[in-house]
Image (cartoon, rainbow, N blue to C red):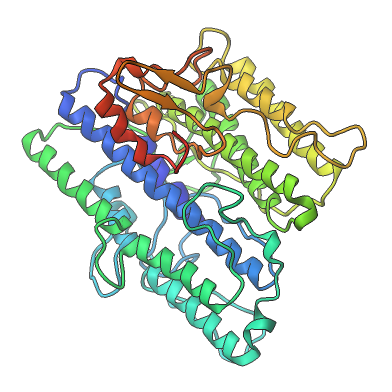
Length: 472
């Protein structure tokens, strides 16, 4: 799931923005809609990642966010399943549809994702050490997990199986993401897994809102545009499988060595890694440490918002002099492992110092007048929000300061036809507002960033359902 989460925003992020001129309005509008649709799937995949972490926490284990870096070598997944970073194209859409397909539907993956090997993985009965097993679809994998919970509950009893501390999980009371409930027994575990399957492939019955159905609609719309205009190219020429370190093998990868691009990529990867770090730190918090839990959840969400800005800028930059005409892209490079830091003052100091390092890096790259000049200030505010108190035991606040959209800005804006409210604590930074109405929601703009008079009230009203309840 974590690897899929990276692939979807990579494809969506490669789509050209509305400000990229020279395109008919219909094409620009479709591109904006596809980007929002894919990002909505990516956000739901993030909730799936949280649900899986909650499932492991419910039986006494910890969250697991480690994974190999892209491109992922053959053999890590079942034969027939390849996960790589690729820009938006007919092939990548076919790949997304292939990943989310329901069981029983025979499809081929996109040509760029054909698996090079043939092998079989299985768990030998009676062995103590676990090993990887094959699965035909993502739904098949989760049904296997559900079966495992049922077998263990029948063998040991639910009370013995679900021995994890429920307070240490992330729930709806901690973050405004739909369906994030506590897993404490077999019924809630099965509900969490069923939600993942239903949102992904739409099973057991057909769902128009499943990831599979959403990707099918994008494919059909894309095909119609290509028939009308075979030259239609909705994405930047972003690299296939970019890497941030010069590769030692001969596999086809794009090493990002353009100096500016490499520096922006470095910041992007640091933001991504620290987002994971803060997410890990939010788990395992008992009732006495709820302020810390909320702090790290808020930091993770805010850092994702900054990462989105940096990633959007990166795809407009050249990748390398060795690859003319190819643009850079996020590599989502991460540390070998993301272990949870011990609780206490040192934990918060390490989290804060890393954000300060990124702030200084951003200030050097994005000086005054640059479109991302506000990034350093946002990071500075996040760091200030986790200052350690005088006693060295508790942070000064339960949450960081204002969320990114609300910096030095009003929370209410009015016209004759509309009153627009913004609640920063409900916002999850999906960026549907900024992408859907960039003239209305002016991200990183100092002062009044809400301008509802720039478009008709009925158009603005259609954006509201894309935000969490109470966000605007």
